[in-house]
Length: 216
Image (cartoon, rainbow, N blue to C red):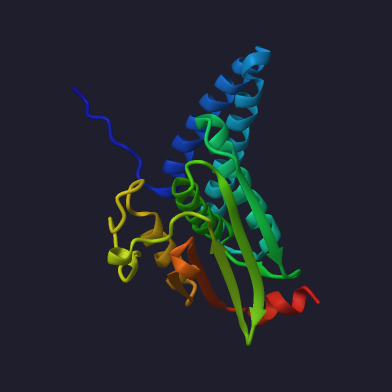
């Protein structure tokens, strides 16, 4: 009896993922025929488009820069969609973004923000506000994400980026954040707000000269 071999090359995996995406699209189209499920159908469609975008970026040899506003909007949209699907708490985003900031590997930076936002949502089960700031400082780009939850437990604050340091979620979200930031030659710090209220994450990465010159 012949054995079935799985194609683990990137083109093979892309082919398999696109088949999965197509199945989800067909399911979303079916849901869209019922007004009761129309919003969920749109959520699935948006998630499929994000998945296809990630796959396209993995296939691309050239990593072009994307505006931080676009990366932020996509990340917020993903988190809002996940809350709709799970009937999550009401979360409001307060964003203060300096214009013209661009980052390479937009899919990776979306993953960073999504993980930080997801942690914040879990920390605020009754809802709240997530604050996001991004600005240039002395040749670097500084991104700050802060929530209004109870803050990070003191016993894990010093090793919060270690795998499974947190018991919420998979315990890998913040480790993934640090890994991606380091790949971009940057650093990320975790802290609590005044009186221990709210967790705050500060990312600093070198700004690429071409990204800055292209925006002025």
